[in-house]
Length: 491
Image 1 (tube, rainbow, N blue to C red):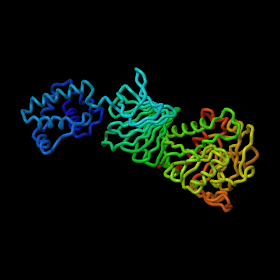
Image 2: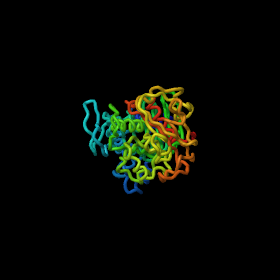
Image 3: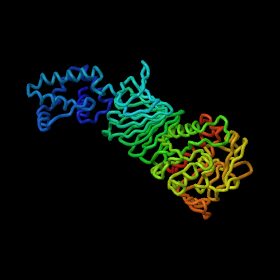
Image 4: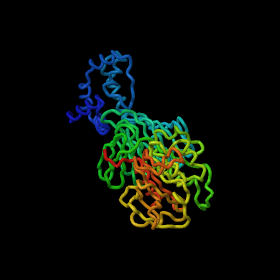
């Protein structure tokens, strides 16, 4: 018993004790008189007094202060007999332990800023989140599908909460629960052996001091690490991986974390303020953009949206991916040329065939190099083993229901799917870095092929088939995003 106590006390005073060891030490101090007596012998009063006397002031932080530091500070302040002071300090310690104030303060987070649609939840009811408001342990932050918030967690750092996030205290010191949604963490450097733990339904991330994002949705946890190192454990089977900066990882069900190299940075989503003239009945451009953004958050990406009429060349810098969404003819093409996206060394996922020619992915003649066709159509999966195929094989009959788009890429492109009987009319195709494009992307009048400066993917999302983003459309979109930014090489 005493050997174990001495070990625990030494580790605690050195700042090396784990949360479990601290709890064990606290229980022992409360219930065993011999242990409390041994504590008096353990403390070297002369050494502590000398150390404190040489310092101007000792800053007391309830969550981290050691027994030795606290008692020595009291002794230095009192200059009286040490035993009454020591007994008093020990009583204060035990009182703090009993009332649960010792290991952690009752405020676990402070709201820095928030948009509409962000609430602080509690069993007694919800209230709008406002800057400066503190959250108690029985409260949580909840973000709507359109909201965002920023919070500061003492000892962890800054947490950005994205769409559909719900974050709460984890029931123990240095632990948080992400019930669902997206968060991005800019963590402070953590003490060795004493990390923060962020838990989702599927996984637990051990934070060692880093910048990373974490998302939980539809039975999957996605993580992207910008800087530092995160230890990710699958809760179903206990298998774990260390995920370093420049890597992403997924945890699904009973599978081990899958780790791959990936580009750092956020996603830029380019959208149009102007509705297309085509009668798409139930489809609404705003809903379409929300679908895209929501799926990106679920993949662990922070997303920024810009309109074609306001985007600037500097907006494309330091991006993991740029997505060109639907636009009417004559709206998006000038913007893509203005920001010189065709020559940018950043992956591009183009969802609008009118943008193919600006990017050099097809020629510019409508009806010859790219085009549309009304009516439902099956799609032939030419390359089912390519990651862009998202596991689809043979012929798909639900992908394109009423609006069909196609493009004619160069021979250097990889065609994953095409219209039946027309292998030249691709509906899903891609260019690897260095593949020959149809023409230089720098000017619309050039005809000599150039090389793709980064990965390029052409994929049209039938607005009638999007709905809530589930099914084949959702799988294809996620596969296109992941392939565009990932190098397929495990670190």
